[in-house]
Amino acid sequence: MIDDIRNDEVLKISYKGLQGTGVEKMSEVKFTRHAEEMLIERKFEREFVIDVVLNPEWREEGEGDIWYAFRRVGERVVRVVVRGEEKPYIVVTVYFDRRLRRRLR
Image (cartoon, rainbow, N blue to C red; front, side, top):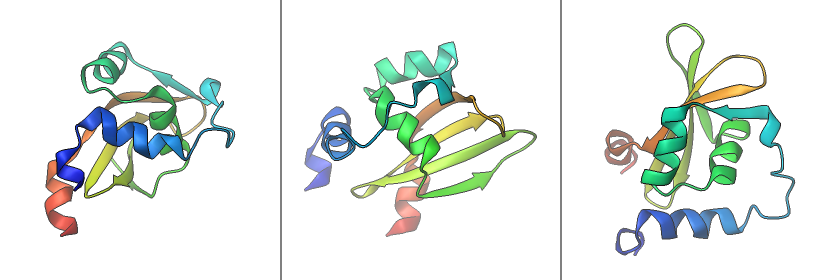
């Protein structure tokens, strides 16, 4: 059951399938200081977040030049808040969006 797995384990499982598929596009995505802290605090792998930004399952527009990249991870949804319409994109923050989890059921 996905709920029995901690966040870091879920992301390692999800990222495992991405390795060796050209996710080396680090220069196309930059991270704010806050986003860097959230990677550590929430145990997201940098490469996973970059892949969500470059290949989102779906995307929503925000205000100004802010947009949101989403990806399902089991029964959960990762939301990446991104600034910029041109590369390099800037990741503002990343988190599991609990509201979307309820909507997907």
